[in-house]
Every structure is written in structure tokens, then in C-alpha cells.
Length: 274
Ligand code: DGL
Image (cartoon, rainbow, N blue to C red; front, side):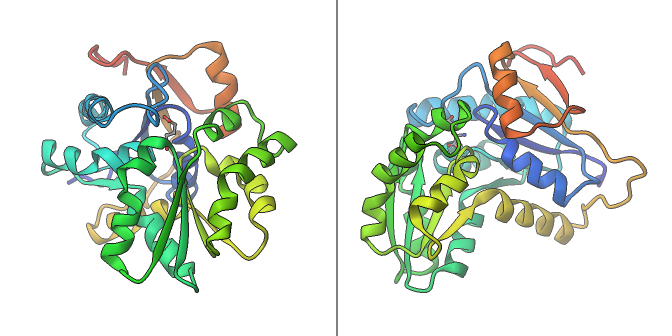
């Protein structure tokens, strides 16, 4: 396989840019092709069948670029669709955001009590506790779906009184269980990190999937001899979206306020304008 091939990455919408940003910092020589399904977001309140179907359509789009690896930035898809994608696209390498976050959380926890917050789809999949149990059966996992946090992040209400009150409403019961580590199990939650930190205090470790996932992608590319370090000019990430209303552009700048990104619109099922 050619090192110069891009890394494919996708999410239900704009939130996955938290992962693209981290990957781009960590691997500046890599070409990145991103797809955000802004026409059909949110996924976190949809059924497993629909989420899998959407994930398959997106993967079919991304493989036109022959990516050397595909990163599933969305926690809802990672929870419900990773095995499905691996079986449908055998021979392709997928990296989800669940396992890297779990491994990071296990490194941080001292009292073996971990909290997980995420969308209703992610939490009801039970994927986080199941992966934790496989690695360390002594660890207790306490979960909480937090459906109001995605709209707060998209509105830019990162650290307001209302935001902290809602976070408290969700997280207090996890704190009552004496968790010492909290997995931010959704693409949007890193944007609310400041407010979450104020609610949980300084003794709880916060795990942001983008860091751990970026490191895993780097390790896998290194192991496979596919890391592209020779670059005369740093490639600019190419971002495809299934819809681009004006309002989404404003939201996007909250996730990554960078002006030189290449942004394109594509409807799944039609040829991309590349
Ligand atoms: N990207 C989704 C996730 O990480 C959050 C937004 C949505 O519900 O689609 O689960």
C-alpha cells in the first residue's frame, strides 16, 4: 500500500473535526479526507439499523479515495457500527474511538471506577462497559446519556451557568459513585471540557477520545510502514459535507476556526466533485 494515500475519517456531522484537528496536529504530513453527514445529523438519537446503514453509505463514499485507514470519529457509529463495517469492508482498516478512550481511562483510574457520558445511542449500546470488562473485569463503569450536551456545544454555550447546571444534572449521579475518571464519549464534549471540569472538580481525570485516537492512528501507520513523514508542503484537510447551510458554517468555526480548509458538498450516491 502507498504511504501517500489519505486517511479517511467520518462523523455524523461537524463534531468529528475535534478528531481531524488532533490528527492534523499529530500527523501534519498526512492527507485527510473527511466526511460529515450534516444533512442527517444527529445520529445519537437514531436506531442501530439506521446508524449502520448511514455508516455503510459513508464508507462507500470514502473508499473512492482509497484511504489507507478509516477513522470512525463518531462515538455513536463506533459503538454500534464498527464490527458491521469491518465485516462489510473486509481488508479495510477501521479505527474507532471507543477502544483508545478505554485504554486511556484504564491508565488514569486509580480506584477502578470510571464514568462514561455520551449520546443515547452510544450509552444504550453498552459498548464502553463491554470493552472495559474485556480488558479489566474489576473496573466498575457508570454511564449516563446526555442528549442536551450536543445542542449546547453546537450553540457555542461552552461554559455558561445553564451549561454547568445541565452538566451537573447529568454527572452528579456519576460523582456520587466516586468515579475518578470520566470518558467524554461524544465528539462534541471536548468543547465543553472547561464547564465539565468545573462540575467534576480537579480530582477526576477527563478522557478526550481525540488524543488517544490520534496516537493509535499514528502507531498503526508506523507499524504498517505507512506513516507519511516526507512532505514538502503540508496538505490541507479536505472536508466533505452532505449539507452546507450558512448556519452550519458558523457552527463549524466553533469546532475548528481555520480558514484554509477545503470544503465541499456531496450528496451520497452522486459522484464527488474532486
Ligand atoms: N458525533 C456524535 C457522537 O459522537 C454526536 C452527534 C450526533 O448525535 O450525531 O456520538
